[in-house]
Image 1 (tube, rainbow over the protein chains, first blue to last red):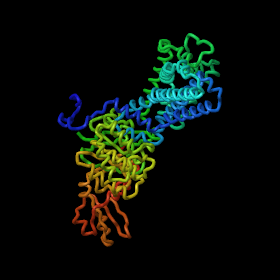
Image 2 (cartoon, chains in turn orange, green):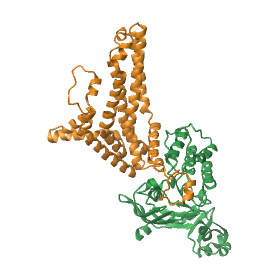
Image 3 (cartoon, rainbow over the protein chains, first blue to last red):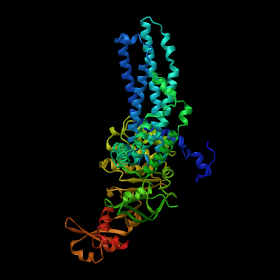
Image 4 (cartoon, rainbow over the protein chains, first blue to last red):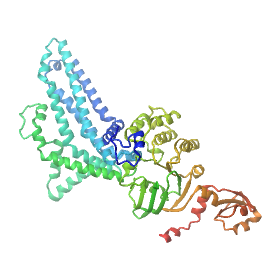
Length: 300
Length: 291
């Protein structure tokens, strides 16, 4: 089974009989991520609820408002669905990150987690993966399924009213739209926001209580101090830049849809933005600090 | 190699000295009871041993430095910090999945076997279980881990007497096999007396008493002295004296059994009685002077 290891103090016979004495880091990481999904079920429940409510509203619109029925080419509801679901997921990600390393201290379960052979770094990285990758991918999947159901519903109503079904399908280019959405979610909601999640996790690992206040008060204080002392607002500009995301150099045509806007930022532009790499470096520093802090932390 | 070896182990919290230079050596296969009043430094010492807190001095657990190698150490060490640390949201089945997923020495079938003897349902969440059941679940998880060292810090705190008895019974019968080492702290000393192989008293961050249970039984005798012989008994320099139903009970260290038998009824004292004698006899200045 395993390649012979010379690190192990036990006799080779013993190590063959016994289970492998080391579980690969990837497996420990995998179970750590699953554990987060068990604990924070709102990660998928919240966007699902929003999607369900939205679909219901869409259906009501189709049933009772003839105007909607005859405007099946309207892309705005589709964008709105994606925006609502992604927005919900973003908020869930913020709440998750603030609580992730604080909750385990508050409920004392950190002592249980620390009694198992999982390092602080793996724990912190697994918690970082949730807002960085898991929540964006989940919200993407939910958004795409929602849009697809919307498309099916529209088509069904069009069929009922004797109009051609082909038009919306051709016009929408559903696949293309989904690709743009996936690109936007992974780049902006994942990589671009990474330092935000890193900061929240760091505060979550450190805060003696009220991590929310500790997470959001310092930026306010820095902003205020900068305003009063230097009469500048570089910090605020930096925060806004981080929140709005990198802007494409070529401005989009007026009247363009949200999808046009999202796709205007090419991967080449995105990955050559210095802000991205600076942000990732800051995120790495925050995470390293969070992992180190967790070593010292005891239940509250 | 000793299982735990500490030399000059110290830990301060600001100006408070929690652990004040502990020297400790625990051999493999022992069951050590660490007994001390509240705030004596037991938990801090255990936390240092488990790599939960940084410390000064030398400390090796299974040959490793616990603070820098906690992750590796936890493959061979398990601990129950206290009964309330299992996350309340976790399902029993999820706890089994998770530990099986991350721990190389966890025997899931064994844990399921322990759970089968209880009324704990696989689909229950920890928050739905009674305190006793949570302790049983935690014990089932820990006993299914083939660890070399098990550390229990007040494992039965807040449990009723039935569960406490069960807890130690299963620990001895199903877990302890003379190659493992167990370190346990508790307030309920009486229940541990028959379980331990070694006992250690800790007070104000220092070890004030340590001996094996064999030594304990051969060294210490307690005599309920006949009233007319109290003066004669006191002449033998008891280390402690207390009154029970108006009669004097004297505790002796290394006094001949025959000699004591002449004074009254002789028996082996409880650890609790010796604890009171040892800790009670300690003037507050002793540690300060020795520092």
